[in-house]
Each structure stands twice: as C-alpha cells, then as structure tokens.
Length: 631
Image 1 (spheres, rainbow, N blue to C red):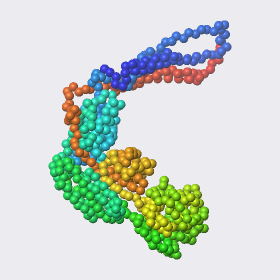
Image 2: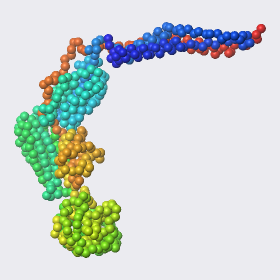
Image 3: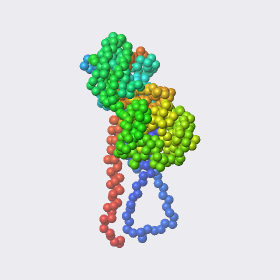
C-alpha cells in the first residue's frame, strides 16, 4: 500500500491541519438561546456580577467523528492510495513515430507510415492499462503530440493522425528530446520506443548515441531507390538571358540502374540525359537555355520506383526585365556606347524638342537642357543650366580636378579614377540628405538626391571630358541605374532542396545587417553568418528567399531527402515486447474512497445539519404569541 500523489509526511501534515481546524470549529461553536420574560421590573439588581464559566465540550461528537472520517477518506483519494508495491507502479514511455519524408514510400500497395502506425498501436495494446505514453513525431524536428497520457483513445488518435512530412529524419534530436521528457516530467521512466524506417544521413549515423532504455520497432522499406539530390538554376554570368541548370541524381540502392532525365521549361524540352548509376553512386548534369520570359522549369526522372516524391522538381523562373532609359540629347552618339555596355538596359534616344513629361516608366536622362516641367520618374541631369538646375549651382569653375569619390556608398562602389581635369564644371550647393558622389577642392561635382523620384545631377559632361576613355564612366552609370532600379540588376539563383538546415555560400564576406532571409509570406527567419557561409533552418516545406545586396537566392524546400543509410542500434531491444504473466501493476482505489467520503459528508448533513436549521428557526415564531396582562 502506498501513496501515488503525496508522501506520508505530506499526507499527515495536511490531515493534521484540516482535522485541527474542524475540531476547533466544533469546540468554539456555542448556539445562543433566546428566553422570553414578562417584564424587566421583576429583575432585581445584583450586588455582584455572577462569574460564568463555560466548559468546552462537544455538542455533537458523532457529527464531528463522521466529518473527520469523511475528510480522511477524501484526503486518501486525493493522495491516490494504491494497493501493491511502489516498485510495481505504472511507467511512463515515449513513443517516437518516424514521420520523415521516406515514410511515404510504398511496399506493395501499403505505405510505410501505415505499417508504422499499426506497429505503434500494437505496442500500446501490450502495455499495462496504468502505463502512460507520450507520442512524439520525428522528422528534422521532434514534435510532441501528447503529454504522458494514460487514455488509450487519445494515444491511438495521435498515432492515427501521424502523416509523413517533407523533411529528413534527425534521430538524435528525437532521442535527446525523449530522454529530457522522461527526466523532467516522468514519475517512473519506462521505455523509449522508436517506430519507423530510420533512414538518416550517412555522415550523422556514426556519431549517434542511444539511451539504455531504447527499443526499436523497425519498418522495412524498399531497398532499391533513386532520386534527385539537388536541382539548381541560375542566370549565366556571361549572358543574362541564359539560364544554367544543375541537376544531381543519386542511386540509393545496391544495384546499378540506368535512369533517364528530362528537363522542360513551359512544356518545351530543354534537355535530356541518361544516368548510368552504380550502387550508391551520385552523378551531375548541366543544361543551358535562353529565355527572357517567366515560366515553370520541371526536371523529372522518367521511371517509377517505390518513392516518387524525389523524382520530380519544379521551379518558377522570373522574367528577364529590361530597364527603359529615355535619353534627350542633341548628340546621342556620345552617350550611346555608355548604355549599350550595360546589360539589361533598353535605351531610347530622342531630341530635346520631343520631350514628354508624361513618361511614367524607367529613367529619363537630360543632356545639357532643362525641360519646362521636371520628369515624373527618376532622372539624370548632365550640365543643366545653372538657373534651372534641380540642385542649386553655387558657382562655375574652370580647370577643375576631381579629387575623391564617395566610396562608402553604393553609388561610388568600384570608382577609383582620380585627378581627372575638366575644362568647365558646375559646383553644387549640397543640402541635408544629399549625397556628394564626386568632389573637388571647390566642392561637389556630382550630387545625388534620394526620394521619390530620385535625382542625380552632373556638373560636367563625362563623355566630353577625359572620362570618355576611362572604365569609370560605364561603371558610374551602372551604379546610378542600379541605385535607381535595383530589381533590374538583381541576379537570381533558384534551388530545389530539402527542409532542415541550409548552408548558403556567399560571394564574399558580407555584413549580416545587409542580409535578409524571409519566408514566402514575408516573415523573417533567423540565420547565422560565419565567414562566407550563411546558415538558416526551416523545419517545414516552403519557399525561403535570401537577399544579399543585388543578389537573390530562392530555396524551394520541397524536394525530400530519404537518407543514405538505415540506422540500427545493437544495444537496443528490438521488436514488440512479450506480455509478461506478472505485469507491473497496482490496484487503484481512489474512486471508491472519494465516493465514501462524499457519502459521509452527505450523511452528516442529513442527520445533523438540518436539525440546527430547525432549532434556529424556532425563536422567530414566538412573536406571534398573544400578550397577557400580568396579575
């Protein structure tokens, strides 16, 4: 006989406190009696006040005894008094269900997750009714579905609702979570049971540590399988209209296989390839195709196997946009080579007389003239008339030398040319918020003004001066166009991969404050940067965008990874346990104790409680008696 919820000192302390309180209430309870007399004239004044001595005695000892017994029974029910030995009490088990992507594979017409659920239900049926079970779903994360629960209906419901996800299995995280749950929340730890295929990455299996109370119920799946390891698409560095496709395929089986591959864009074939894969081998293939249109790129392995989720990958490619630039100049041939050298720009040259103030797209360049109305879009002004310049001209200088560039701003990135001399140059008056891009001893020669619209004003003509033959000139205009329309010059790279931890190789060491990692609905994801490696984690399938300056990397985490090897533990118990003839159990009698305690309190109220109410009501009826004259 033992207590499940309270220790013996705790039980005695609570029982003693409550019993003392009840007895004290009975000793202090004295009912006042009301006596009716004829008149106060017949009372004689006493010379000395009588001394009254009240003896403390119990008015209703049987009521007190009944209440104390009922209180004892209710407290025993709260403490969960059980018959048996504490060594034979119920245990708390953790049931880990493999919910990784590989559990969607089929053996015949049955999915592996269906076999795992059946095995989990069989294990629960073999447990004693008093044992409690926590159900945990394991893929790249360990997700508890229930607390330690003895209700078999809730446990079976959690098992039946388990479905395979899109992430690989991380068995070590699941085992660590189970051990921590038993250490913090278990009354008497039982077994940690893993039910599933147990396919893990080959580089993590040797470092796995298993708990001593582990039991595994393996679910055997297909042995021959192949699928995509990675599908990646990016724009070519030499031709921005060309996409480069990278495909990696692996044979997970023990036999050599010949696997055909087909790649399509918008339903049109882009490339085909046949992989002759040895057992456990992985091969790559690359394709190139040219398009400016947006569309869907699909890579498919043209065959059938037991796990088809990694036989197909789909990526949405963005359209190649061109930046329209309208140049108003009397000498268009001077500026034509500058804009043709910048990819992604569609320049249109017009005379100043045909100026249109209603242009609402792209960028407008004004070469040495001021229009009657300023442009409604971003604009570049070159040697504007001093009295009509959008940025005030302080003075005009002769033989001006350029001394330095604003190197800490994206507008001045990569600009190194110095000591360039201009015959005539306008020097601008810089206001708060303006960006002095190029400066001389006399003052600012190129000024950029942020806002809507953005404006850049040159105090000199770069092509009519010594800058005509400098590499700085096309780079300067490229920086200005990128500052005004950053999306046009954004480089794209799209990758189909698996959920979990993703490592991104950056082009250079980047300030983390300029990096943004967001989900498809715009929510930020935490990340770390170590050198040129960015790392983030996503536990569910979806789209994640990584923005680093003018580079955007899109990760479609929808391509599941089944794992390289099947994990087994030689120190763990295997299979379903056998039912022992002497199962660890004990008899629980707290419902009967609670019932008897409640009946005792009810009996006390019926036998003793109602009488007090009747006695107290009697004096109130005395005022109805008729008055009599004293004789």
